[in-house]
Image (cartoon, rainbow, N blue to C red; front, side):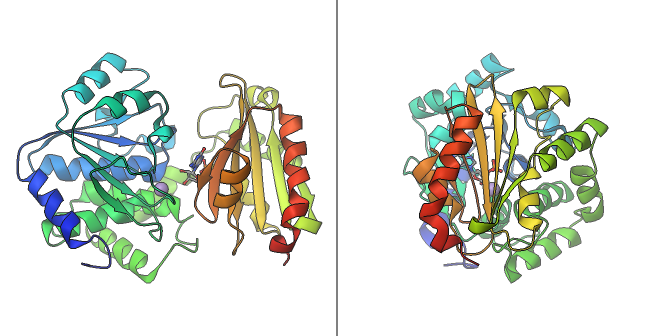
Length: 344
Ligand code: 5GP
Ligand code: MN
């Protein structure tokens, strides 16, 4: 094991693949977040610099506050640029899948990737990875896929000198967003050392925080106000949940990414260890749910068991096909089973 990261066989196998010119497609999960975009673009810059033909294909659009990232303009959107994206995937000789653990997480792209008969490399930190990839670099203890891409480059290159300012900016962004600005439990000494090195290599840390987090519109702040007003606190279960109906979203000119981070407000209440947000989505006909916890209560298990989802111990997501009211009622009816686990 080198750097506590990738094992030797994995490194050898990757080096062998990259020793030849390849046509590479890099894919993150649907509704890509900072870690998904940061890791795919970070890897993309690295592979391009190496002389490889590479392209990032996202299943669908991502928030505006990530579009400043270097290389963002070269990303193909499978939904919007479907023909071009399909032709890249059909012509690929190597596919990297980043920041997700099974092909069900890429929505409409699932079928075409399942049919692609080329080597797959997975880089991911989600629990219970499925075994579709020929080369798997999967580590649930990692803060972020971006930290793993740093390890990947270090291992494949035999050092980090090849990390450019562009790569540093991309990887910094994903580590920052996936660790809640370096505060989640997944943040290790190693995470900080990686981040320190990225700053030394030119990552504009202050500017990145500003570009990602200081992007509110008045409408979004009002939507946050609405979400906070809707918050229900269940002290008995150390739980706080928020609901947002489609009507409320529409009334506040909802844009993709606007509700990012809302769920975390529940955890800022003293004594609250489990926070949830239910967001109605008429277009998809579902309630999208985000779960967060502090401490040992595994929201990954909870989401997996009850809401067709998963994720990490302290951050997970899921969905429900019931109405918003029915979903919340079902959620509340589950809590008594977890009263012991949720005890302070
Ligand atoms: P978020 O609540 O921010 O959408 O997601 C939190 C974490 O859970 C992320 O790591 C995300 O990838 C994962 N996640 C979100 N929704 C789902 C889902 O429906 N299924 C699975 N397996 N993971 C999810
Ligand atoms: Mn991630």
